[in-house]
Length: 253
Image: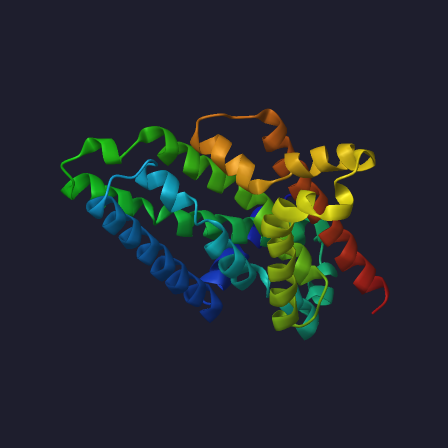
């Protein structure tokens, strides 16, 4: 893995000069700024049961579905389309180093974008007279959830990029996979034919994989190691599949 840092640095620079990165950043900050403004209006007009931090992070599926595909769709698809990945792998660099370098760069940018939202809460703390609006539990738990779940979300985007030569196709596939993970898993146990006793074990597995349940637990300060293991093992699986996909495409090219 000695070339990992070199690839990581290169990918970070490429992301910083890529227009899709800034499109993703502008859209992300615009959407999250609108969400934050809306919830402040709600708190100013009536008493809310949840804290601002909990309600803010509750909208995490919106930026994930649109930001992650924009950050990851070109990382491997563009390399394959231009044929540069074959040239890159003729050097003393392994497929694992390439995939992990590109994944890590996208994940760091993902964290940076979410980290920029701390400015919203700083402004709330700076100009609000009510310290109860800044509940530390949901705030810290929300950012911890973002960091842990982001590992899996970005890995899904990289896997989608490894499956196609076309950036647009990779972006659409990433959106579809993330939508299935965030929304499909949430409603899958309610499907009629899965209500029988024979599917009880399957339903319990699906319930354990529900990202919305993980989010609520994190914001309540409940750190379940099974949930962390789910995200880490899912991340490892997506990255392994990405590596195998790249190698398979190279063998057939």
